[in-house]
Image (cartoon, rainbow, N blue to C red; front, side, top):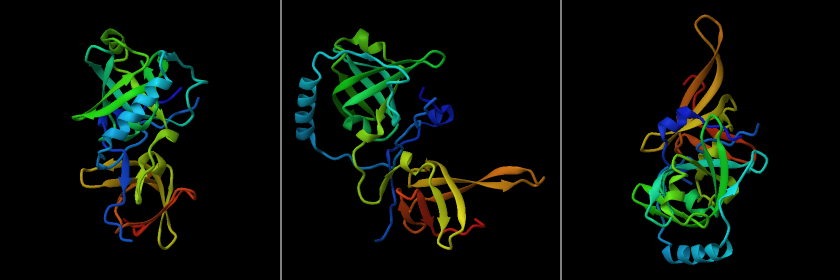
Length: 250
């Protein structure tokens, strides 16, 4: 069953892609999967309309599909939550966890988890989706009226990591950075990426490492390293390693 991090949920972190700005030259799904910096929304309305029309035709007649832990995708990432119905024809108003909702808009199927004590799992083909102010407005082939849309209010939306759009050069999805080893240019291990923070100007790596308290007992230390080119030198996703210009004493 996908796990949910309440602390992260309450924080409502923004963004979907972490960009190295200033750089010169049972089966737990990651919660809030793709956190990111504020990436520009590209105007591709005509292409999106053609894609939506094609997908709507292909998925026509498919309803809201009940899912189980076994059928839930192993790479599911939480990317938003249904906050209300939109309009009278089954539209959904969604709060994306990333500004611009790129993963939401790109994914052809959305997976819904609703409830905490005894959560229900469903999925449906996305008919259309677009940015609407700070939210995303989406339409499912499975839902045709407002009452049905209201049944999904409060549901968390997941998409498969494989459906995320490809990031651009020096852009990384937060979900891909979490868990990577961090070392400085001298080869000193600094810990592992436990999470990221968006401070509005840039993304910040939250790196945890084993340490000792004043009483000598083991504790978890934390380093906050800005994800900018002056500090972050290389990101090797295949090797699961980030090299930074950062002193071990910081």
